[in-house]
Length: 255
Image (cartoon, rainbow, N blue to C red; front, side):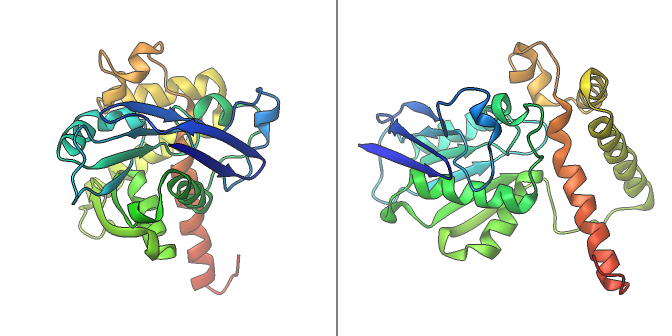
């Protein structure tokens, strides 16, 4: 059947893939100039995989990755889930592949966690029917922040949340671990502020030190020249902006 993806200022048609097939659902077929208008909410280019043998008890699983990855990181999990009869929708964080070609253009505003949530919501709604919701959210790293917030703001859409590699806070970290977190996040924030090829180099350098899967042989960024764009660091900026705003409110300084 045909699904019509709904987004502000962009409407496209995407054929649902046959069973066992994978399809990338694009939010628009516009030119680069027209794609500069990316105001949320908008449908993100999700990777949809149908179950090889649908099960009456099959669920719709929405997978949201973290830094510096892409929906391709879920390939093993998607294979296992679809073999078990579940439908999988792997959604990229805004500015991440396969959304990066348009959202990383000059002049495009960086996302926030709230706009990422709304983009994810309209993507889910455009790719599911009433019988395929609520969905199971499977989230990793910064994708967990989007998933937590989506579940809180849109509980009708979410059956369950599976969060990987991110806890609720840093209360359990030692002083040394907190210092390391501050140091690497400061490095990535600096890379985002510097921008350009230097910012890309700084981002890629830390990703190599952390052994990011996308930079390993066969990984997405390895195949694309081994460089990770600095704009993928936007979650670090938005996280600390939110923390500072919260601290000002608690201190009576307002926003």
